[in-house]
Structure formats: structure tokens, C-alpha cells
Amino acid sequence: MQAASLESVSFENGLTFKWSDLVRGSFIERNAIYLTDIGKGHVQGGIEFRKDLLNPTGIIHGGVIVTLADTIAIVGCGYLYEAVNISTVNMYVSFVKPVTTGRVIAKGRVISRGKLLSLWQVDAFNESEELIAVVQITFAIKK
Image (cartoon, rainbow, N blue to C red; front, side, top):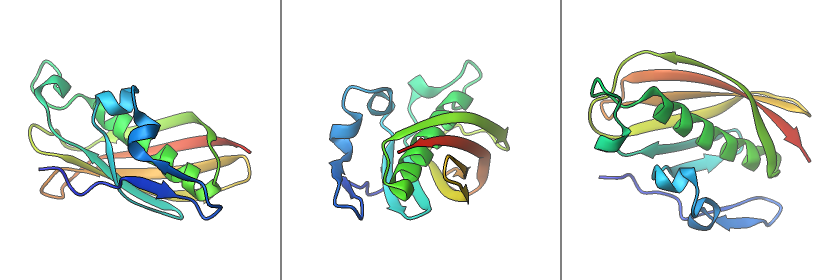
């Protein structure tokens, strides 16, 4: 069962968007990535286990976890900076444990907030709250 997801996000500057409108027709929607919490400098979301997300060995493909991490972190970064023109510059991933069932929960937080670059860390967990991956992502900010 999916955790309660956020239906909309409102920035302090008054800009509000519906998650479904933002992701409609996108890779994010196709993978059913959802947000559960967002605030200044932190964000959380997840993805539910599906057979089409598996690699040939029967575990969730690493690219799914990377996609989840990048998606929630870039939304968190946009919320923090109140900006929509953000690009992923680089990403480092450490896979700790495989996932074969259940949901993947990703918790992101800002590590460094610069004027042009922002570093985020996303820790991904399985349903038993065991760490499965750590992802560090650098974003370029254009206002």
C-alpha cells in the first residue's frame, strides 16, 4: 500500500502546483514516483515495487532508485530555492542492499546551499527501514 502522497506543493512566494499536473505524461508519472513530505531543505517520497522495475536478477533496478532520488531531490531543491530552472550536474551512488519486494522510501536533505550549486543527499530505505542506497546529487540553480 502506498504511503499518503502530497497532492500539491505551495512555495512561500505563493506559487502552487499539483503533483499530478507537474508529472503528467512524464517519466516520473510512468514510474509512479510520489512525494510524501516537503519543506525547506528536506523532502521525502517513494515508489512501489512492481515487476516491471526489476533487473534480470529479480531485484529492483538500480536506475529506479537513482531516478527516485534525483526526482525527489530536484523537487526539494526547487522548493528550497523557489526556482524551477534546476539541472542535475552530477550524482554519486552507493548501493548498500538489494530490494526484492515492497516500497522504496527516499529521504532527501540539503547538504550545501550555494548561490549557483546545491548539494543534496538522498538516503533510500526498504519497507523495513533498512538503508539500501545513498545518493549525493549536485544541482545547478538558475534563477
